[in-house]
Length: 87
Image 1: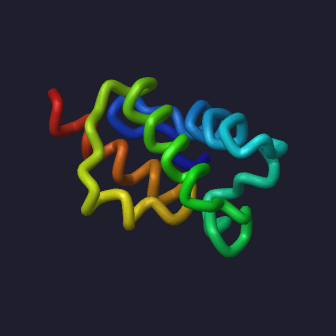
Image 2: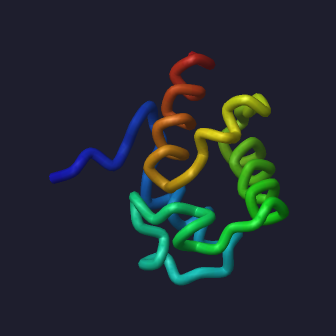
């Protein structure tokens, strides 16, 4: 069974959040779907994802980190890292 939690972060909950922001079916937000190329995320949607992540998980994402958020998997890994830092 694949590990779907990192530092208390549930990947399926994260998938639900991203799908909600993008107004997509959860099944479309696969681990490796590229936000821009595959899911047509524009800069406004990316900003909305960032704001929701910061609010939901109580983290602050630096501008330099935002470029690494390109898929659900990369978002999951960055959030896991940020949550471990805050402990």
